[in-house]
Image (spheres, rainbow, N blue to C red):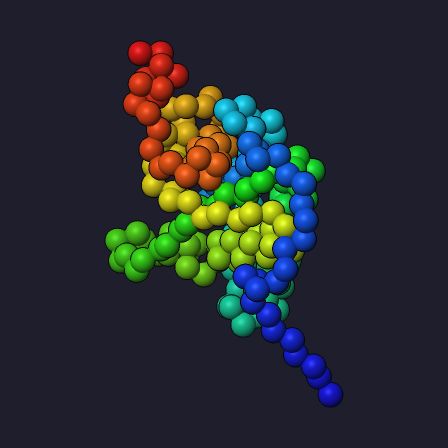
Length: 193
């Protein structure tokens, strides 16, 4: 006696949402931390850095053990709660777009065991993307995946903040403007050349 419902996020009606068109929220996802930024045009109005390294640690037990299963469930729950919090903050600032990195990890043998474990098995970047997308659609906010190429490099040149927050600010710029690259003269003037 169970009823299962399925739906497509894209087909759900969007509720009305009173946003400020020049505002964007963005995240930079790494295996051990997440940078979050809300910006209005060129001004950063809110930023946070989340340390998720405790969620990506090993339990030291077999994957079938109760301790490992508990850690996996905790990681999934904490990820879900974090995503809901990020969208709630974005709604508070009435952002028009929530920008996330479009990440694709191909199979590369040279990265090492620990990196492969983090990016393929532990770090739930797809879960983060989906949870944010779902919350955005249900609240009426636009969701946009942007090219992540050189976001940390450019972000660190343009902004004097911790790496994940600088990268999130760059991802936000790309999410708002839709432009991948920054004007080289603007970049040189920001770094004092």
